[in-house]
Image (cartoon, rainbow, N blue to C red; front, side, top):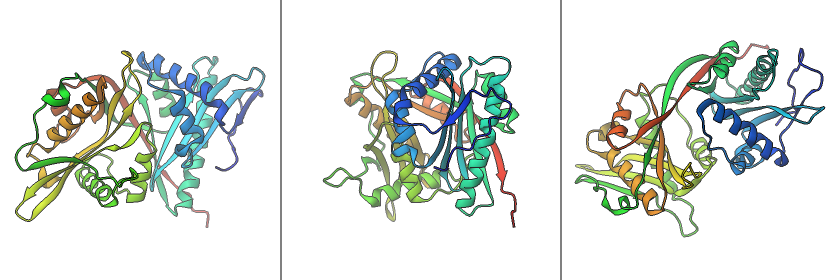
Length: 347
């Protein structure tokens, strides 16, 4: 990460910027938990996941900064600019709501301006002429939405955060796939690492299945694997491939990547569906339902209490209807806010 160069002009002189360190994890987690609870009434943030973001494997593709009141030592804000993939940068900017006299808005403005500079730097290193700034807000958080609007972002999509309870009986009671459809885990070597051929099949299926989806873009295989490897709760034994029989032979028809979720209000761990996709040539054969039944049964066999997922509220495939028919309910709505950034010609 380059040296922190955030401009705090117009803000109190006791405000100071620094890079995050391991010892900051507790305070950053507290900031994020408070932010999410105010916006939604609950939070799944953990200190371990925050520490991983700040200084662990998830940190190396991020440029981050903390803002503190140097007099009191109180943490005021956290900024993360994540080099997500070629042409896309994820921006997280969380400011404590306890600042008065418009200071929260002013601080957020300076942080979003810094995020733009960081994103331009990342794009230049990738030899790109433009990049997409991708941020978000909870549907019921007008304060964060105002920050984004003032920073030049536009609300482009709404997402449904859905959850489904899991019972122990579902480990063995759910129906199997239709005839001609097989679901299996991604194969692993004796040391637990996945077989590259299967990972490539998952990548290819997901790339194909999302080709006509909102904001879809091609992601290289190394970037895909590294990004999902960074997901909190990542497990190689939570990746599945669905295959179908065709006249030409067996075809990779669908894929599901999930991870382990922290305990919910009931104290039980959960599973989270990071990605599920079905190849367009395989749609209408029950592949998605077979994959979903598989992840439910797996969660039940592990003693987990729920399976969570996110779906586009305007999904062209009507995926939200399938999820609802299988027992998922919407528990939260979130928003995507985007801004296109074109690099200035310095020649």
